Length: 510
Image (cartoon, rainbow, N blue to C red; front, side):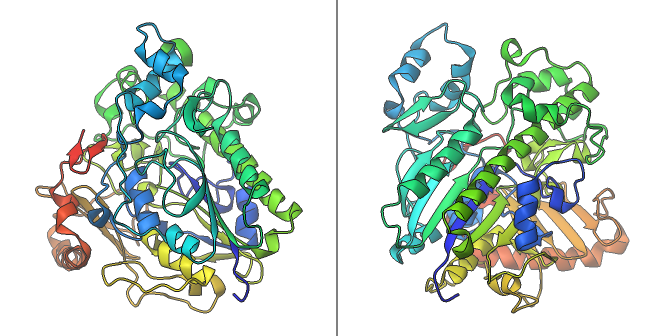
């Protein structure tokens, strides 16, 4: 790459790798994601570092695993200092009779204080900024202190929390975090991306623009998304997702649907007054959730198309690397789970939880229309992006990732001698090869083993069967050696009481 490329980095929230037309989903309408895939490369074995948002995002930006950076669960607190909230929000939080749309942000923002989890780590965007890139961010941050610009970003237009109410999001504007009434957050995030292109301080320099959509994170209710997108899926049979009974480890496997929906999940409290009556049957819940999930993705896809068109109209497309991925996978009925890694207790490591979209396009650099089957991880993105940007980088010995730029350009068929990926979520760790997956939960299990060659759907757990003892020993040894090499003892997730219900401070979990 002679001329340094601009980079458009699009990150979605709770987006399963299966949830794209270009990935083979014939029901889901994603013409612009398909457009990126056709223009470049799609990975069908792209993995997050942890199957939940905050640790996965930290791993993307630091190139480290959770047991190195210390974020092991979604962040329930540490977003901002409540003094930066708008007067409207402060007044509403103090009221005993506040309207429903204030309850969600109140649960996470009232009394909050910022925690800067990135402090002490060097984000790849810092290195881009130090090497002449103008860096802009719009959308979800969820790595602590969502108010203060950091990590090399000069343009900073964030949402306050992790998930947001789609039509009542809390966003940073004119120096305060304010609640937007009746404005669709997906469109706001894209509006700010276009504004970055309009207001660049150094148009002669390359840019890195991070567009962090909150879609397709819940809620998926009737009033949460534009009618025109919901209408696209009213009569969809949803044959593209499994229709199976609840997983025995899932909350909805032990409770009634009404109990499950009425309880708090990642800061969301369902309100029957606003969201309508809670569906009384599993099938009604399934249809409503899939309709909303698919609508959220198609609405987001439309804004992706808008950004691609903006690049074309400004003459920037030919010099821009486009990256599209999600923070973690998502089960929408897969395995009887509605959620990601924390959709079960104990947390899970199914492929549907740990596989994410991976689309890369860059004219003249990445040949079009290819699919890569090699396994790569989010902890590989750090070095890959710097490599493609031509930014010099002295790799620390404790950084686990490798650049897969050679896979993208066609100059390499493999980037590791032994293709293995690892994941962790608190005391749950996974090793995955092309043919096998071992999941260990510390200290007492339950553990799982899957023969992916003969059971790609992970339906038959082989752990504990005598004929597979040798396979388990080999995989467990490799997993142990890898984590021993990279874990920082101060942040060792295998010793943390992570239950998938949220993280409050560096070593405090819900």
